[in-house]
Length: 234
Image (cartoon, rainbow, N blue to C red):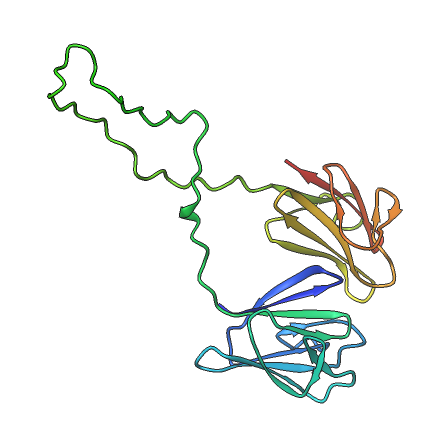
């Protein structure tokens, strides 16, 4: 299914599947893709999806304009991988693609018996002309998916103290729009924390979060919009 991947400063905020003919983008809450930033107009742009699967982006008379791959546009056809920019936000268009064929990668379970070795010469007491039945050779090894990292955020202070949120999505956003918003992104080898928007930068173990994504470790304390949380992994 075609989709738009929304990022800011290289950090993925959300992925929005394009399920209708018109997908609006803007600051107002009724848009399909809401970007709460002053550089984005209330009704900034619309992504048009044709019956044949092709897509176009059209600027809706926004104040700061819309660009595709760095070029200002009024209406522009989109190719998979094109980047639509609105203010500091980037929306990468990804067309419908075939899922990867994971079966081509072979995984072996711990403790799995090795494949039997076929003897290169007849065993003793067998006449050379006698045909020795060969043991069957496995032609398929079932796919074993890698273990998913498990983590959660536990609220330590504030009205929601004690609440625990499992980090089951690729990207989980936390905070209050317009005040302080951070994201926790799942990566192959762990989780990272990044500042998304707002004048108040998140605190990590009492220190203001630096620019870019910072790795998280179990037990780390996150301060955001007056609420303190604990990152728990494992």
